[in-house]
Length: 190
Image 1 (cartoon, rainbow, N blue to C red):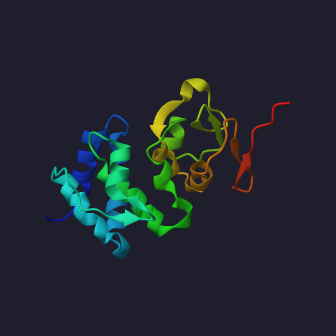
Image 2 (tube, one colour):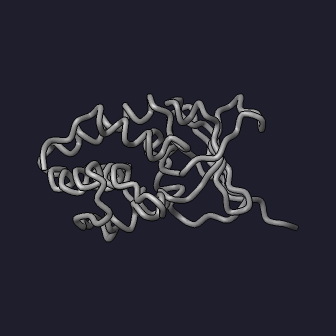
């Protein structure tokens, strides 16, 4: 089938998912995907990535921690299964504990400050109406935009486990001075 080209992968990702990803983010993600897929543990993802690049609609199935590559890809985008991001998420789950469970919440939608998506560390999180809000200290409500949760967690892996667990509305998570996220449960109504 051939090799996976970083530029070709980035361009096709932007073509298919440009409604949620900028071109520069696609370039960075393509670089990460190719790097992880070239490692021994990631080589099995090359085949479905090539199938996706060549426009196939049926993909080689891979499972990781009970998650199916194809199921995650369809959850991310039902009209055009997002095989590259599903592969990235499963490869990250296999690599390290900080990404454990990222696939469980990847396709959910959240609200975030765009600067968090661009790489700034999220400092405050709040759950309201079953939606997570990811912010910086100086975020205003006008700054917030809708994203898929994976877009925040890939750059803020220490939040993955906290967000993957069920929390009631009103839960807040703050980054303390030591670089640790602290969960603050909602106050009980009196």
